Length: 296
Image (cartoon, rainbow, N blue to C red; front, side, top):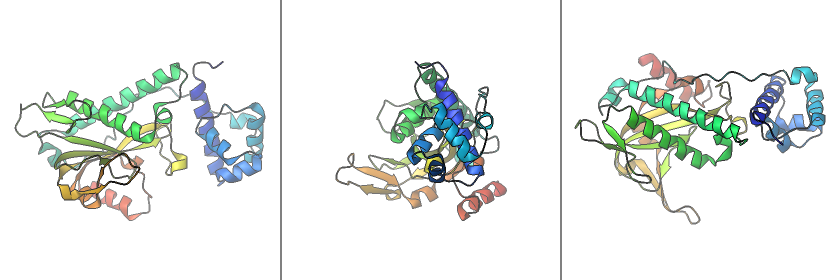
């Protein structure tokens, strides 16, 4: 029998194990070897997927050289409303040229976070893992994209409306302002380039997100992904057919059109949560983002 809050407790315990392991510069494999457990088991514990036994908790504590009290020293934090990065909005003119504003994006991001948190709360009540651990990542990207598109329409002052599901483009101009074009919204994980089934010329909002820990912190790497989606980047601009790479690989789900490097370069960054950018802080790409903020 499971009780309400079990999933949260397992997730918090997993985060505690991960923090202590990394503080000791141990890999999951090294910890598993020291605790005489399987590496995949340790990975499951850190992701909050294992209903770990007391004996295995003791093994992990000994392997980490901490007491049971120290290992279990975590507490459930009170949920607070998540907010977009206060200083993350850039290139105001780019978004204003299509009749929108940074404030519209701010409200849409806030609403997206609010709804995602409400979904997770409902799943927790039903004793189910959070959304990011329940659906495949491709489906998660699609769901976040649909929620964000609806939120943009809501805060567009009736300038945009949602199109029907699986119809291009995602957002249709209502015709109130001739300045506002139809918009297609694409969502991708981390630094991936967004893709769809067809390449179509037009205005795009390209969004990328990361999966953070419960406290909102980001740990880079597939094995370190958390459970809370945060939008870390939004780009805006007009794409031509040449800005897509097309493929029709056998066994794939039909034709795919991926925004290529030239297309990503054409798009202007209008929002960036630099604290949660999935980039090496010493790398040139991260430094280019820093320079972008300095210029703005």
